[in-house]
Image (cartoon, rainbow, N blue to C red; front, side, top):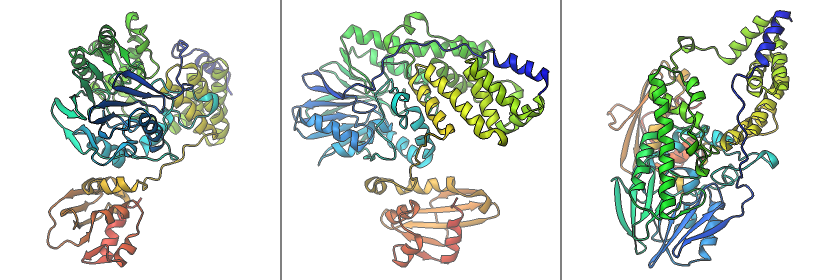
Length: 559
């Protein structure tokens, strides 16, 4: 290796590119015992049974449950605890929003006559996760929540001790049976006057529950005891920060005397609730406004990440610690929500891939091992970010892959142990284990779906998902159409393939082959539970036209 290269790498590896994160002692909830806390004479909140809370409101005619945990297993424990308090019938379940840790246990709570209430858009977001984002959202969620971490590597989550959902747990999701699409609505549930407020924030479908006679606010996930997760590193579309602020301002007009979030502990006292809501909205608004101010000054996103910090009077609040959301993640999300992915430097319009960058770095330094040596030097200098970046480059060189992965993994582990932000800690440590080969995230079977959920899933969602499974190589020269008639729902669909693009419509031309079946049979075929040949042989599927042509068409949608 050339002396000049060694000198250059010495300069690079021994000067951290960003200041080290300040360590803060944070108490996590991973050791907390599950408990049901009585908030008032008729309100109880189940905490630490899983990632989120489940809340029970007792009325003269029965019970109302707000949020239902993340799995059948977690929900079963909460249901049993609630049943020790009251044996009244469960009249209604309210979903505050579509996130799995709030709705995947609903099957446990439903009885004959139980309504499931949500905003009108909640079903859309549920279907979007199940039909579009699986399995990538599952894999990244396992990293963010540290579900696969064991022993001392797992430190808990700032909004709840642990997510009780992975490939071992049972989803018990039931779809809403009653929805509303107005800004507010008032319902009488179990003999109680309950106001539901559409309050977009962490999700667009977020609703808050308010008991006007008791002045109790249930804000869902628009407030928890940490700086809000304005961007989730598991992957999420833009969370509109100023819409979130408006929802918090709406809450402030209610004069609530008790606030029971869907994560962490309640806040009691009118002044305490008012202060918390004011501080929370001010923190979000401050980060938004200062990011936009910097944008107007033509500052790039990396500069703003370094500069935008909460003012001391907010940063010191216990419910605004960056243990869940993180200001720098929020700055990036806000910047990109206005400006998109391009940062304004033409150099970044067509960046090199990691393998390409690694190859050029090796040529520049004259030695493949120079990258690995620099990564090792950075690690020994405790410049763990630079060590991770160099380790990733070195791992892209085939001769160095295994050795470099071990160093890369160690650097990520060090970064994770140095942060007090629980999603970042979990992501660092989980990916560290994956790279080292000591940890594996078992994949969900994308074709698996509980029977009750498969039956309830609308057939039009299946059909409109088909274009996203079209194989471009097989279909690049194909122009074909296939009709579908579902006798149980009376719905018709036409799938048209046009040289690598598929479209879905409803009118079926006369000269097109048609597949006739019922919606449940087709769902089973799509999910791999029934082979189409067996369905044809059994008469569950009939074809108007050539069976061979239909089979060829459907093979276009196989990976």
